[in-house]
Length: 295
Image (cartoon, rainbow, N blue to C red; front, side, top):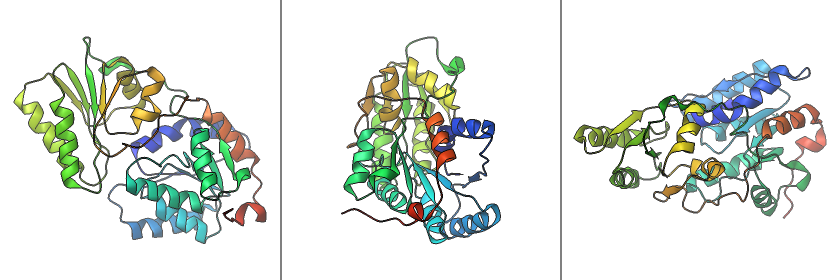
């Protein structure tokens, strides 16, 4: 399996734990670093596949770093299981495209809900390849309340708009402009333009108009505890759609980054067990490898 961000690693952790306990499964993990260029990723993945010789590669989500992973796997005839397949529609336009490229290269599609599965059917993915498994976001997570303030607070998480520096600046300014009470601010992901967000946060905290706790990164247990306890979640992150509804946390959506993403009608947990069961039972044969689109 391959990860390229803190969020992907968090989603895969419960799957990894179950694979470690499974008598018929083993795994190798490749962690792509934010500063790796695309051509370097191509080379690293190719070497990694030649060395490890996996039966199948598990790729999560829709990050651009996963596109060369999918293309190398496809070119080497290594089957791909795509987790959160079909979920990128409605998000950042680049994420939509990256997610669809990964999906088109993949052989098994592990969807978080029926809406994502239907999107894949519409682009021609054969129905037998599509498995609705739910979400791993809450599997095995123990909420860690160590960072939760002892008074009402708002939670802020703004990630970069990779298309536009100007929109990134507007997003963080709008989010910070909404703060009037105690607030917890979490640093952005590693995407392009993150330095704009960090600079604006530093300037805002220095002014001292609002009491703020800033954490460049938090554990998944800490994040979910903050998300559960906050008064409002002010964000442009997809967490507003895939985690916040689980706690019925009110969200204030910022900017265009996930403007058209739809909230799942129900968050189904326990996907880790279903994913491991599917991985253990997949038959690697010509039928699996010979992809075709039903248009």
